Image (cartoon, rainbow, N blue to C red):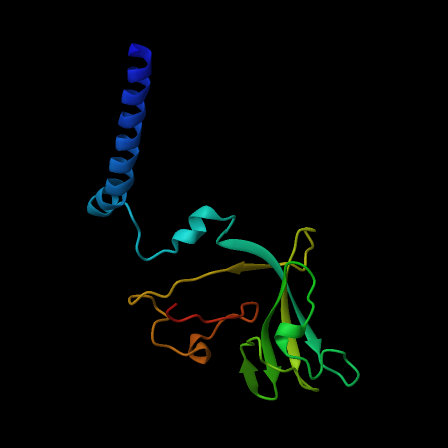
Length: 157
């Protein structure tokens, strides 16, 4: 009988401990300044890295290309490849699922590079803060070196 009561007592203590710690841990972590509100918490739980070797490719949509007239959501891209921009005449389009490729467009693709090729390009994410030198400037005002390219600008969420 004593063994049976001891089991229930330990079981209740464990449940109470989990409930108490589970509810207080986020509150205490915030109070102690242990949570960085400016970063994406999902990066903690994935294989995300700030720098990744990527290869950038330009693909001209010449007549007869099967992608002409297709929406981006309907394209079948190789694994670890994404369409990062579409150059149409003098306009740069950040593609969405409903963006349709037209003849004469140039598709800029980024592909993961595991082969160690010398043509790889280091791709990095740069957060522009209020005191950053680039804050408030257009990409044209940055005067980037010829071997650097801004692929995407994300604002807000």
